[in-house]
Amino acid sequence: SQTIHQWPATLVQPVGSPLSLECTVEGTSNPNLYWYRQAAGRGLQLLFYSVGIGQISSEVPQNLSASRPQDRQFILSSKKLLLSDSGFYLCAWGFRDRRNQYEQYFGPGTRLTVT
Amino acid sequence: AQKITQTQPGMFVQEKEAVTLDCTYDTSDQSYGLFWYKQPSSGEMIFLIYQGSYDEQNATEGRYSLNFQKARKSANLVISASQLGDSAMYFCAMREGNMNRDDKIIFGKGTRLHILP
Image (cartoon, rainbow over all chains, first blue to last red; front, side):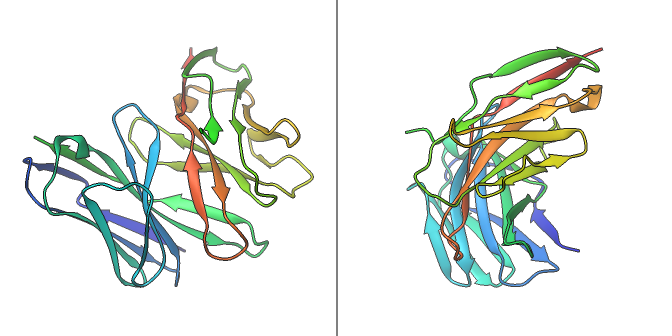
């Protein structure tokens, strides 16, 4: 079965510090991968998605970046965090099943607090 | 323009009653998919149900069913016989993209459901 991992689970970082959040997927190959951010009490905002190694599409221009160095690894980074970067970061992977129906599942999330 | 609209920011429902969570969407694609997710206080996003735009029958998964009205562009989630554990945030989402790999999902702002004992 497929599993998606995220770490760390929680993170407290000062303003201006760098960020690196990692997401890995097991049990599948060549998945679509996504990074979402959820501000407190709000909906999900799609930040980046990737359809393959080295292929990143950005949905929202900001001080964050994403990379996909390996097929099942997706990394969210920042060189200098802002207070507004605080939130719950969710990685997700998507695939089409045998009926060509699209499914998407989420990792456990990383709660980031920028102080 | 907002593509997924959930007009109910919060709902209070008595336990064992049926619940309908509203969702309307906007797309010009012929092929799309609609999802509902549940997010309890723990933060995890739990996939509940999926409806493809070409599916003729409404999707059902246990106590969850999706009332798909294509002409009205609505995809309401119905929870039968609600339980206390159903208290959570519920998100409607839509998959846009063609039949290739450019799939991505856009989420509504969510509805917070409170089940009362």
